[in-house]
Length: 424
Image (cartoon, rainbow, N blue to C red; front, side, top):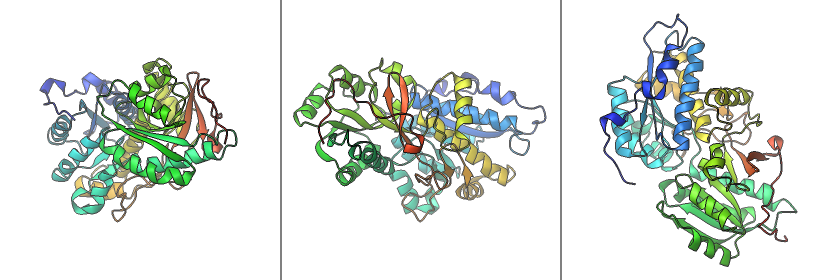
């Protein structure tokens, strides 16, 4: 990843992201000193925007209800521009100059890994909301005294890939009409987070009933997927199990343009946002992927209220998964601060966060302990009364139709017209 130096004028101020409007629009009773929280994400990315938006929404809701023991939350947002150097400088600035008690956000695993030592040095909790590298909780597990300051509010890529295998088994292999879709091509962007995706896919797809016939890792700079899709066709794969986030649009657009005779399935992070339909000019039609939630998916008693509030405030029909996880992080942080009457910082705040146990919009929000390989990561469980989970959906005629789990499904998989349905 190319690293760029952080220019002073590129660090977004509160005013430039509209934070002033909602930090001032709080009850007059909140006259006490604000509690500062840093928010770091790439502004130009769909997922980055979802992080900033959700932090703003949560802060405004918490402030409207009295803040933290009468103290309002004030956000300090910074554009990382997908650079570890920018993010590290922003982390230091928001802690040392803004006096932020915690930092929320981060989309890229490489950036999250680069910030972990800074969280330790400055003894400031880092609440990562959209990365997927299992190395992040792995480091915390290996060196708990050093890295206990880091918490992950999204599932690492090993867990995500395992979920994809389970979903594929339930929606394709167990479906008499679609069981013939069992020849898989693994297609992943060459990034840190997809290493575990590929390894897990290779292990769990055969157990789920699939045969892996093609495996391609492509460079993030790839613009022409024709050779890749030609090989997938020649190998007679009829399902593409993807692992993409940073490079989401080109492979989907060219899959549609070239009418590749294979379902596009797996993990496509950006496709969780309703903006992805316009970003691909509708080429995402038929794509299957996962997200933290969707309109109409009553994952918990809080999900619908979050979705409606987000849509009303930002005029976005469906937020990306980073919006859900960031919202969880903001409320978990607020809960920890309230339990310590807004006084906890550093190690005391880490201790309070580690004991989080609240109902969120993705399920029950609590963390694996430091003795787990997934240390300080959200507990994952398909039973959302016990942990957090994902849903699977398919893009159909501009809409995201939930196909898994069955209790939340709003439709069934539809096979694009140019893809022949194989016999089981």
